[in-house]
Image (tube, rainbow, N blue to C red):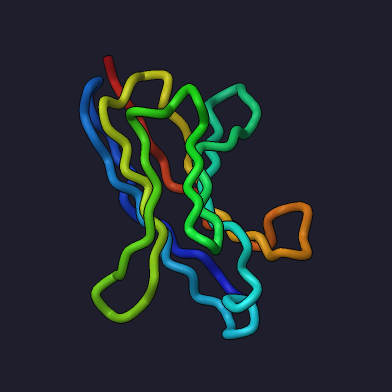
Length: 124
């Protein structure tokens, strides 16, 4: 069973920035069949919502309400492992929540793998 390891959450004041990373530890087969990687978040008392996605062919998509402040990309963790990065700028208290990375295969209708979640807290 593979896993996604997240890092980078924390507490910042309004207007600050955070950078979340997600490193997948999956079998070669699971990596081969990745269609989409992305991030979702869940604020207290609210449903989980989609933040951003990055498709296998490099297409990036960010939720309309977050465009201009959030961006998604792929990077390297320095040890040869590809990781998914969520750059969050000009953070606002409404961005507070738990952020989850996910990976979905082409044949799936829902994510196949989830990260453990990382807390982001933005104070006024």
